[in-house]
Amino acid sequence: MIPLEKPGSRGSPSAAASGVGRSLAAPRRPPPPPQARGLLTEIRTAVRTEPFQDGYSLSPGRELGRGKFAVVRKCIKKDSGKEFAAKFMRKRRKGQDCRMEIIHEIAVLELAQDNPWVINLHEVYETPSEMILVLEYAAGGEIFDQCVADREDAFKEKDVQRLMRQILEGVRFLHAHNVVHLDLKPQNILLTSESPLGDIKIVDFGLSRIMKNSEELREIMGTPEYVAPEILSYDPISMATDMWSIGVLTYVMLTGVSPFLGDDKQETFLNISQMNLSYSEEEFDVVSESAINFIKTLLVKKPEHRATAEECLKHPWLTESSIQDPSFKVKGTLEEANALQEGDSVPEINSDTQKPETEESVVTEELIVFTSYTLGQCRQSEKEKMEQKAISKRFKFEEPLLQEIPGEFIY
Image (cartoon, rainbow, N blue to C red; front, side, top):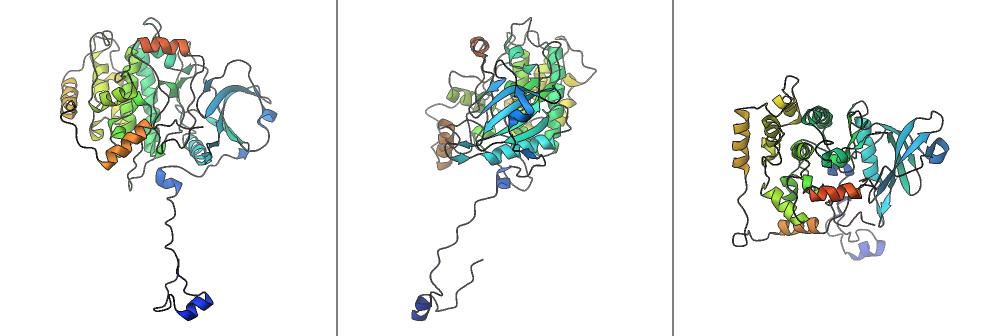
């Protein structure tokens, strides 16, 4: 604290001569601590500084994943022969120190250490330039392949029911511990095995945030096709933001189609804002009415009207007694979901009825246009053919393009 000056002391000859009472600039308000931005700052895991190669050998062959700021390689622990996935994450990008974001990701993984549906953290290494997260190895890879496969190789509805229960149990755990993931999508859902179809593991908490009841959190981040309307309008995020993404994810897993995908990012954003999506018979011809109802309880514009993870797990589509075939229908609740969506719909925007730009809307638009990519996002490096095929089915995956501060983390 700066002591108050005595009356008349400022600028007096005696004060000037002695240097006491000299004019002081107003103290700068310190920047908000990382917790104010929803980041955890403390970890329990001992960070090892010895060479990573002393304890592990990298497996030959292709990378498991690569992104703007990270690469994932399969590795073998030398003393046990056990397989792991090593995620190498650069600490600095274009002069910006991103170590705290990595610490937050580690802290979230520690928090979920005992949950079977979240990837397990084994060890952490640090070098002058990067941090290395040694993670559980999920041999089945991303669920991407099954989402875009031909019908005979794609997920069956009973598969989606089982996997979605696991995803929701993992998300329910995270939400109960005030963690919102903010980037739930097929790239961030792994399988323990591909054949037979294994269990899921939720990964990549680089965008996750800690929610506190006493404060609002607004972020411009996510992956275009999966972001909720409140992200685009820069309204407060909540656990319901994840539930929207789960609705999109369910749609994708059942149909192989991305419901809001446009020809470019701006059209995708417009489709989301205006709730332009279809439940056509062509896309849902072998999907039960109960599954469609489940999606409709999530793809609701108003966050407060979306089903929670707990409510989703009680939905008839996911209960053990569900009849898992397209003939199973839920009456009543389907009409309610339709009415709820109709009440949340947004009138189509045209050039004659555009609202005047406000300072906030301009800032939001700049954040959307001048985009940056998230810390730690890893993509499969050998999926170009599959992605081309996906695009032909009106379905593709984007890197996360939105970030709190545009351009901060691009190198």
